[in-house]
Length: 370
Ligand SMILES: CC(C)(C)OC(=O)NCc1c[nH]c2nc(N)[nH]c(=O)c12
Ligand SMILES: [Zn+2]
Image 1 (cartoon, rainbow, N blue to C red):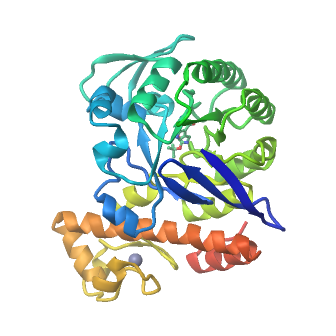
Image 2: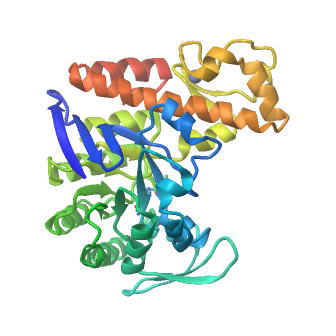
């Protein structure tokens, strides 16, 4: 994997860059749609390509439990199995074990947990996580870390961060496949001293990219931005920076301005399935009765396939009738909306008007500016 910064923004820490993997070029800053179980829910690969998605996420935890990483390896790896021609980043399972699996035990060696699917008992260690990600064959893989719950005591966070660093060391030692780039993950909760210690210890291990983990876990957004203000500058300028689990429109702008290059979030696809879509003028709950006879597009300012061909009334009907097409149309539009924002952000960095774009977007979307 190669990363190039093409342009530094003058008035912010934003950067316009390019990541080169075996599966193509990725313009940054980039939003990565989440395809947890080898599918970005309701979207076919050709639709993701139409939308301009260049990299998607897969999850070690889910794919290990079902259908199994060995099966996917026999299929020729995750790209082949799901017939996705772009790039893939797999998360290490750390976060998912803590949030989905019924956690049984965290030890230095690794984590024992019950599967959320059938209750069977499993054990994942840094080494096993790397082996699973090697079998899946993603272009970018993540260290096995503990995503610390919020809120947590200083003591708990300190011990956890130190173990996450030892786990990162074990991941680096165990990772042999150079065609897969291994990223380190910085933790530390909301404690500045622990974030700085984690950033130093993880960057000292020298990875191909760095993620900021343990944010967007329920803390106030302003707290998250503060952590980024003092953590991101400690990460090498010539490596990609990835803010995990973050992706509401405002957080994308705030993260880019603070020097983040990569984002992932289930939000756009999840709220789509619940009938909420993004528009330039804010969120719109299209399954709401008030749209029963609204024959205008989801977002009159949107140029996506859905907004050019279908009305709010029709999509509302589909959702209320439980028609799967409804989920597909809201998902397609929300992904277009976020991918389009990232395209506008990339252009704004190139033209040095990122802050003006943010101002205009926030005002129209209805975000009260801080
Ligand atoms: C609650 C949501 C998912 C919104 O955010 C987070 O949990 N944010 C943190 C996060 C997301 N994905 C991760 N993967 C790993 N390995 N470690 C992490 O800390 C995280
Ligand atoms: Zn649209």
